[in-house]
Length: 135
Image (cartoon, rainbow, N blue to C red):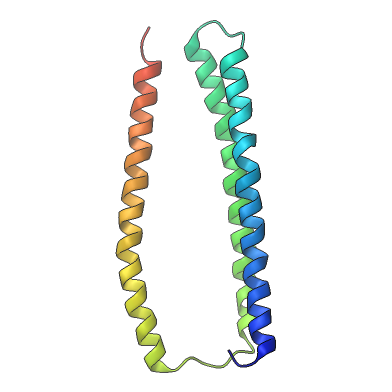
């Protein structure tokens, strides 16, 4: 960092993203799960398949809201980055090379995590089809 004030500005900027992101995650989890659980347990729809479909629809709606809010927060954060970094000095070429090697290592880890998440989603989808497909 160029100065102590730049460091404080970056810390405040990171907090600006991290705190709302954590709050959104913590608050949206019960908002997504509670209506679906109440409907699934106390719903008056006769076939279980209909109750499960409506419960998943409600949860899916709230998950879409959750994703939209997170994307909006990320876009605001990303738009603010150029204004924050304009006063900072340029990074030396040897540091840029170190950053590239780190990003290559992290990219392979990200691919593994993405594959695991996709496999879990496919498995969950197959389980839902198997559970709701019986007559």
